[in-house]
Image 1 (cartoon, helix red, strand yellow):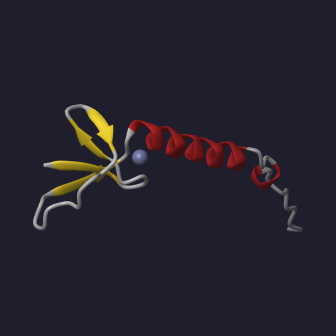
Image 2: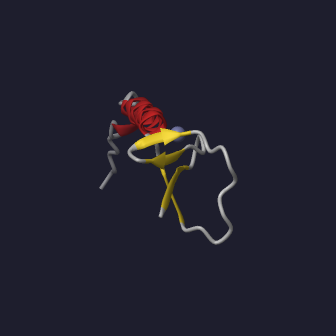
Image 3: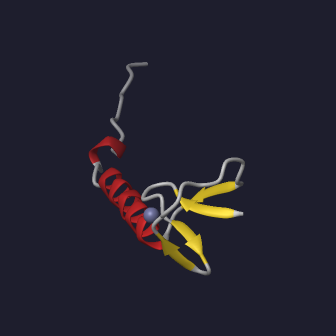
Length: 69
Ligand SMILES: [Zn+2]
């Protein structure tokens, strides 16, 4: 089974991520994932998005509604 990074298209070979020199054989079973470099980038992106959404305290403030009974 071949593991290929879905971002930079490197393939894992003997525990190392290397550039693909030859096209993948037809019918080869390829599993897509992240190499450590792209995984770190993806993680940073997720962390940034989470941090941004946490920066909006106003949207979580409840507006008090008084209804005249
Ligand atoms: Zn990669």
